[in-house]
Amino acid sequence: MDDRAEKRMLAEPATKPNRSAAGRARKGAPDAAFDLWLQRGLHAMYDDVAKEPIPEELLRLIEQDRAQGPKK
Image (cartoon, rainbow, N blue to C red):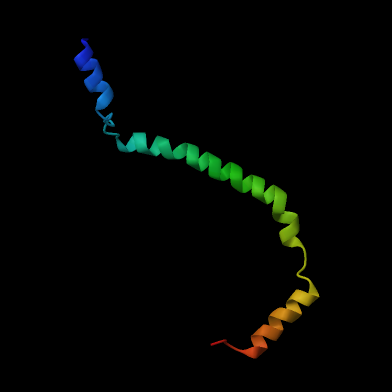
């Protein structure tokens, strides 16, 4: 390969090959694995917190806001 051809290859943007549906499906698999890992990790960290009862003071404030009606 001569210098001109080499420089032309470096200057031109690389073209992406056409991917089949199977190739695109495989690309999504790591995302699904990451989503599952993230979901499990978040559940492990926050399920106990989400199961705690809502504090009475917060419930009172919510009911008080509801009683005031819609704000304009």
